[in-house]
Length: 228
Ligand SMILES: *Cc1c(COP(=O)(O)O)cnc(C)c1O
Image (cartoon, rainbow, N blue to C red; front, side, top):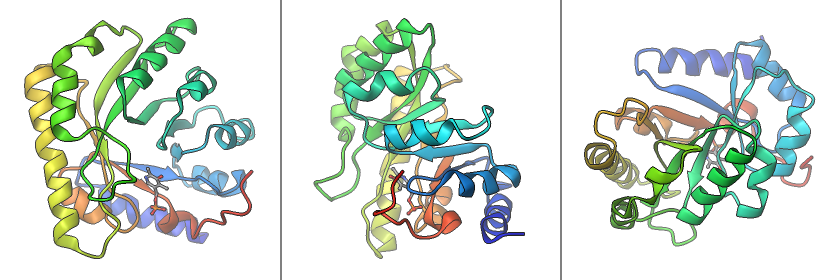
């Protein structure tokens, strides 16, 4: 077994009793690395650059579920909407509207997660919890027939302080429950909380993550100079 395959096996056993699924984050890694993970049974992959994803997916099997996990610009939506399985980081109504429009054009309904800003860093995208509740209260999302809001996504602050990471994930879980109760009550499809990366996925699982997005732990460090 290769290194990628050993790590996947380990991760899979950790996820076994949690009900959470693994998104293998393959950004900046070549198609061959994805193929190795695919051969070990992994089917869900996360990418964060439209062009890179477009190139790689053409070299890879068509039963891969591609998740777009990065910040998505509205002008790029049309390129991924025909095939993407889940868009994790919807951080504005403008973006959700554009996904709806483009999905309508190709006759699809695209699953999306709304990105919650829980980290203290100012650079991270997403709705503040109160902003998210206010936005949903306005109700426009209900009229968008070609998107389905499946849940929330967040990133914790990049820090060694586990207490802080845990409290951010806890806030995300609490917001998820509140949004579910107030706006998606009884809707079984609102059931995803995407949180946790290589350094913090264990904490995220303890706090109720349903999708962990793990990259460097599986594929090794990213070479930012060698993007496809
Ligand atoms: C790159 C990335 C990940 C994976 O990060 P690792 O630390 O490599 O596991 C997860 N989520 C998002 C949004 C990312 O951009």
